[in-house]
Length: 334
Image 1 (cartoon, rainbow, N blue to C red):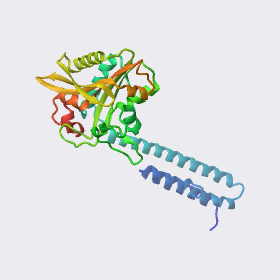
Image 2 (cartoon, rainbow, N blue to C red; image 1 turned 45 degrees about the horizontal axis):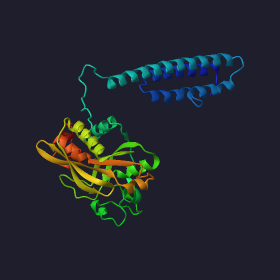
Image 3 (cartoon, helix red, strand yellow; image 1 turned 180 degrees about the vertical axis):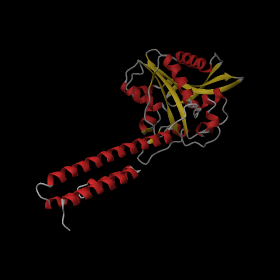
Image 4 (cartoon, rainbow, N blue to C red; image 1 turned 60 degrees about the vertical axis):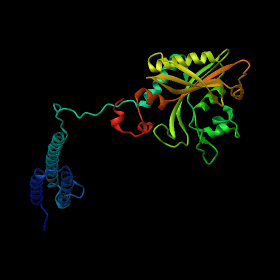
């Protein structure tokens, strides 16, 4: 078939009509892009028609070329308009799906509260910080030296039986008390010092209403010239007064701890009963020597308490296991 300018002109007009009809019927942006490629791409229908221009005369080519450009611009304009229309429709549909009725009541979520153990620890720390103590912490994974040796508990000492310990294969252990923090602190600080050390401790204990293999302690340590047991008693009485909210009868009973001498258990009369609440004593000279302090110059006192014990007393909790149950009915009360 002979290619003439009239033939190409008819093909271009037919192409434009078909393309405009197809563009108007498209409802998807991806389909619209495929249609554009089909008509205006490098291997599209318009390019195939223009491939016949080589057989036209020099006089006919400019007119057909101008007509082809007009067709291309018309189709491109229609494509752009349809793309804009589809994009607007897509945005409107998305707005409908994602729209929010701001007049509807919001979904309420329960407000978070501090765990009773955290509340108790914070209360203890606030009291001692108010008395001039700084807060010190240390690692949970300890060495035998810091957990026992430096605290006047050598390997053959019977006091090791007082604390059933979790040992690791490499000889390290999970700390059985927060006293190692005191040793680490004294090694890097010179007297006078006053610190309070809160933290989690671990012992191989049978779990029941008052015992747990994991629990929390807070210990205090003060080292300076001229510290006496009388000052220790005054500090503890002031702490208990602030902790319980009033001055209560306090009793100190002679006891034994390897790292203090003399040592005492502290009882407080609460709601008609005597309760054992903490232990205390003057720092043993061997402990001071272990950290390079001269016991002829410095003396110190220390005391320690179980956080769970205080929390149970203050909040009238009957079972220590409630602290670790994650029961929202229990936790929401605090």
